[in-house]
Length: 182
Image 1 (cartoon, rainbow, N blue to C red):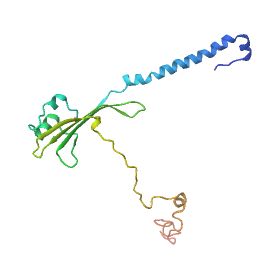
Image 2: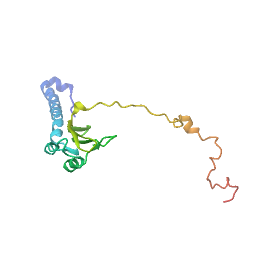
Image 3: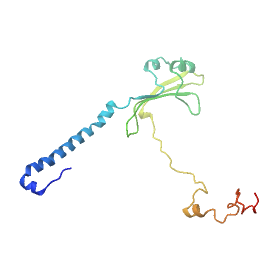
Image 4: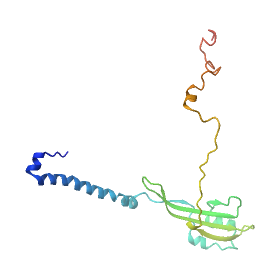
């Protein structure tokens, strides 16, 4: 701990300033070093994790609309990550490279979505790669359906069972409640 005596200031004003400057300089150096921790965690942080079914560009180039069928596509690319909600005519291969940074959300570094469309006969009718511009923001509805009977005040919770018949001695083996018989 740094203690300053007023008599020392009168006798040696420069030595007091020097004693105050050293802790201030060390604090400044510590702040500069801690500021670089973001760079250290970015370069030396956890390795990225591949998620989903990544489609290689070479394999994707082998798919020709009007030629391959569903079984050909599945043999070449594997099963799709998702299929159309209401029909089997659209397959989606979704992949992402993610990295979990300390004290942050999951960071998506590289996302790739490939959509393959089929006609009614099961033959490829179109292949396209979807980007961020093809996505749409979905507004989340924050409404809740009210459920009657779950909202209780503090007084209802504390005194709700007072005066209700049959609850005090239900299932009790107290001799006072059974007339002295077991």
